Length: 244
Image (cartoon, rainbow, N blue to C red; front, side, top):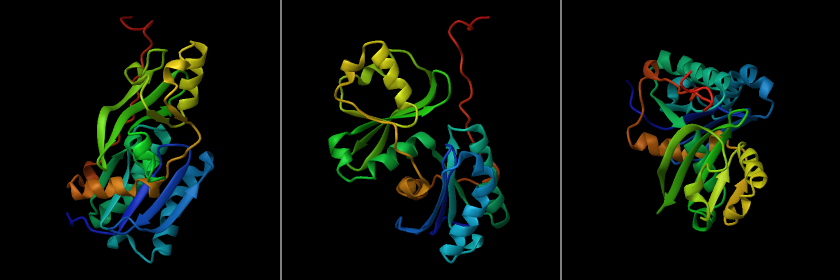
């Protein structure tokens, strides 16, 4: 396999908003593209990659690696993004890097403002998974390093979810946050979370987690494109159905 080197192609495709970016070895954005229409993701993603490579003055063989989300997230989005990344990587044996969608959310939110990590050193990433289900993970920011405090998982929300973090200065980030906050209000538990920051309207994009991908490259976490797999986090079970 060819060794990892800059530049790096990034694909963010696990949520309704799709984005693509090309960055150099220092994380500088050379080109980026964003598609806000969920129904256009399948049609536009490959064109966005083509446009970004052209804007960056690059061809696919010049890429050092391709980073895309391995999950969790939209089944269709993950499948389309992974297939596209593998389709580009396989002919040229370009290394691939799978990035956790939930880690990318935490990383991207922290890095939108350099003062955020000092005000709030813990982020709970929450993605809507329909009904009362979410994908979630808990991440800490210590001395400039991302730490996994609770790995990504699928969860059926109830009023006791994330109870270990109640009363702490945490940021809850993602499109599943509004659902969680409404549940807290309905169950009269919202006062326990008075020190928390609820961020439901922020959208992650490929360029925002470039540093996370570059860290993965530095740690040697790339794999062969033929071995890349996504994790759909699909198994949800209602307590009333268990054992039947």
